[in-house]
Image (cartoon, rainbow, N blue to C red; front, side):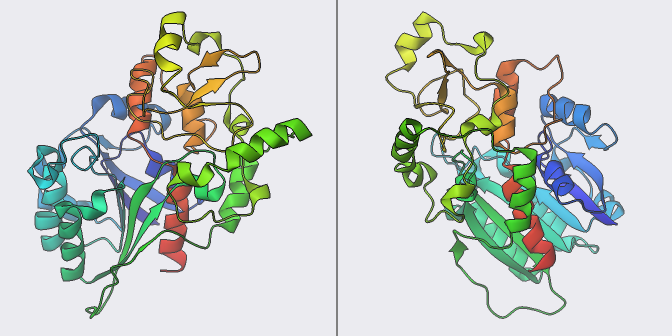
Length: 352
């Protein structure tokens, strides 16, 4: 059985990706300092030991005791985001990551065989990234790096992220590739499974096809990706991820419409793309994610459940009643795309 340590675990996106692969595994611990994220995680995975502590406060002895085969991690992205101060390793939120690299991984006798890391696009230009590569190299890990977005696989959401998969080797490695790939293979079986989870609901009339063709012209611009990796007929629609078309609870009021209409991206159920949803969605308008135009021409926010669907969380994934919509948006904005992670894990275990 694969022993997994989920670091900076958030709301459990890595856990969901492992479930998507039907692996024989156990989470020996999920560690995150955010108590709200831990409440959501615990609600969905009540049997996992959750540790609400800073990574740097956990002793080397405890890491040896866990003896994990796989580390998954999504370190805090704020030190590297374009909207932030980009203080990199000077930002205290990187302390846990630095501790992992300089103290734990370097000194650990029972090192993990596999590592998967996710972060924002831009991490690859940071000092933290350089520390990561240097640590992996000095501990005999081979690795591959990627910049991937869900929209490349026909999921109608742009969420470009940096990913690294690593595997420890028995012998030292002479050369390491600096290439950051923008395409990946070995995902066809998983794509079929995703389409079973979110079956196609939408068939277009000729007029709607014209609208969709115009949407497709900006798909590449939306994705910031070098290429789409599937046939166009495999692309999914926003409609395939909606809970319902209409939802009066999430409609914008007149004041919000005046503020938001001129700065927001507004899409319909026929769209094959949407902008990246950030943690400030429904708090600010510009650059925080797309709005939805219903069949009755109302403008509304996407619900937290719909954004979770676009992130490919399982359909039975839930937010506990005590979690507000604002909290859910914030947690989702810091989360990841489950399907993309599952592809990387598949490649890590079977090919790499």
